Image (cartoon, rainbow, N blue to C red):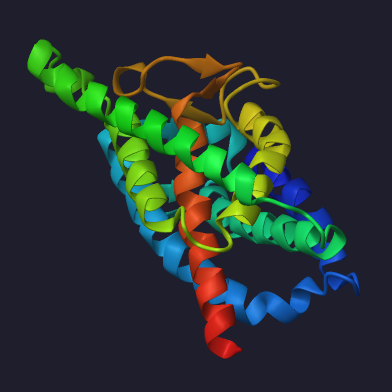
Length: 235
């Protein structure tokens, strides 16, 4: 198995086996989860494919199986199944084991933090090209990730589930830094997933581009929105 494949498998096996825990009973929510993953996954795979072709990011062949769908390795496609699955699992675990949690304040502070920061970054790096930056140095990743984050926050921060989402997102920063750190070269000779310095700010959290925080937020927030929508519609 490829290095990227092992990262995906090790990330998935724990949440999958614990999906049958009787208190959480995550398997009973699969009928709401998988349509949500499909809808969000298609959008993100198109985004991923586009940026791969633009050279915003890419993949080191020595860490891959060599099976591609378009320009994306199979492992990258599976990433958009495993990460959403794990996130909703953690969300439901927190809801099941902490029934008296109070997340409204967390959601309020988090929405202001992510909303203002994403707006400022999007604004700064949209204006930057007019100040002398060339199209070759255009921060595609920075602008797209932060712009989407701002718009999503604008439409969802008043949702009843946003506080739980914010808490789950903060908890998931632990596996985020582990998994994304490995993918971006923290323990390998070369990064499994590399990023063009021309299209990002250049700030790194260890080996992880700063923009990855917003990108994961962009992935997980609409996923949570759809999951609650399908579950409420079924009820």
